[in-house]
Picture 1 (cartoon, rainbow, N blue to C red):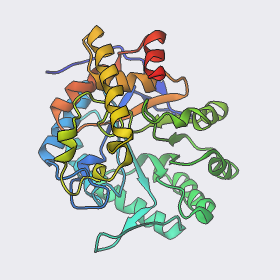
Picture 2 (spheres, rainbow, N blue to C red):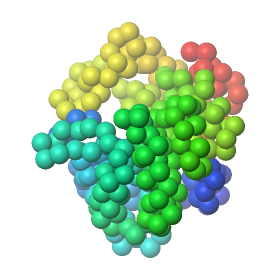
Picture 3 (cartoon, helix red, strand yellow):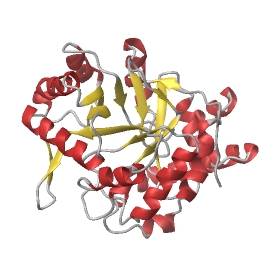
Length: 320
């Protein structure tokens, strides 16, 4: 199935010139298995097919990170884009580094970020990264140094726009004193709405674009998650240790998914599309990062490009 949406309500990301489709391809899981934050083994061919399906359906941006699969996700993205005439925007992230043993740590030093940027450019096979983001604000004492390195990379033309991910308002204040930035990437879903308290209002006040991640809470709100499926996760699937997949949170999250499934049934939409639409209803949200690992997964969420909840339906979910 190929869906082409000719008229789509795109939104400009912060102070950039990029008009984004309401959802983008999240390439975290495409990194494959065998590393600390993996989703278990993945099929690269299926990942590439998922990217192709998403782009054919009108999605115009991809979000990845150097740490996903210890560089492998970026390589998969590059393979998927090879030979395509219409290129999407490609976003990636730095500050999570690793060694030959697969040990991971955070680094915000100038030299480290510059090495990461050069490595990402090589793996992605691009001359310029459309949006380069500080993945985590750690070590916190080095935030200014790390952010200044990002500004310099932008000034040199290696990246077009810069942003941050997982930063709190006081940490964003420290960056903004150096130079404005384009976007923030926070977690946000109906199961974890904490960003509504301070983070999203902060973005609104300062004209910062918000591209939210985990709108389906790592698959919990797709309407397809079951206790048996969770029990059968591969040993290297990070979700085996995630609190949201264990009691007391698990029962609440599965009940929420059932509520979303019922709302979706009224419109012929999936629970996942409802979950994504709930995040897109917030005026501070520019777009949502949606994980996709196969064409079938794309087909299950692509309706979120144009599906929107009524105020009553959004309130029904929020009340739950």
